[in-house]
Length: 381
Ligand code: UDP
Image (tube, rainbow, N blue to C red):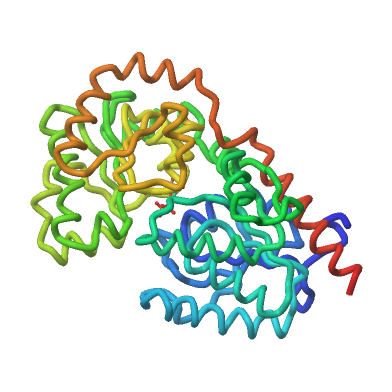
């Protein structure tokens, strides 16, 4: 069935796209555009504010979502339970022909469980990622969602192989590529806008570091929280400016632990919008981040990345030479110093290295497969 046969108007089924955080908005945007009027956006409200959602909805030209209430700011189980309960009520009133979720957040798991509870076909975008780190709630979310999904959209061959190794049937697995490739290509500002952006921040192309951190392993305790800024401070003291747009979770933890002096030498900023982030990342001599999305974006932008994490579910960026895992603190400062010392050679090597995440057509493939899945059950019903 083609997408044109699945229009969504209030009171009709459509394809529910359930999301709740910034990276889901970013990476589902091109798929939502492909789905067109069939897409029915449901936002759990996990990160619901202007800086983390509102401006992303506008910038990415997304339709107004149905918004759940009382989900954000609670412990994990409470978030999942609150979202699940409201999704079930919404799906009972107006059952979608399929549910799409992406990644590994609590919203992803809640959306998947809501589809499962009502026997609605479930599509998991970015299936088969594994950090094998059971201390990360995201690892549990992605494993659970993969095992109940009907269509597993695998971004890379390694992701497909992982799903097969877990005995998931081959007919549920589709190699699609990652939608990040097309969203970066579409949202990256043009060269003049990027030059103006750098001028606004007082930065020179290829001569600064852009850093983001927000994962619990880097923010939960005062020691962990101090380690990344200490490494960044070492970089700044050695003469390379560091721009550090702080995630709200990180900002709150820095304030709570009284660590503001540690970020004193850094160009501390609030989180920026998506186009600005891509524009700044595109010209950074080095990126430092614990973000999942940035590990993919760096391969499309051709920029080197130090991943400040114990483990990663995205080894592709490391295997292709874009990224390396480093310990926050002195190791971060030392590796950054080394990488910054041969910036021109590294940048020219990376400029010639293709992204391992696909060809820019992932969303079109996923939209076609989703429509077929939704159509086949609609016809069978
Ligand atoms: N990002 C952004 N503005 C910022 C920092 C990050 O738009 O100030 C984007 C970044 O490009 C990536 C996404 O937000 O696409 C990553 O979000 P986050 O780090 O919250 O989540 P993760 O990718 O780790 O799941």
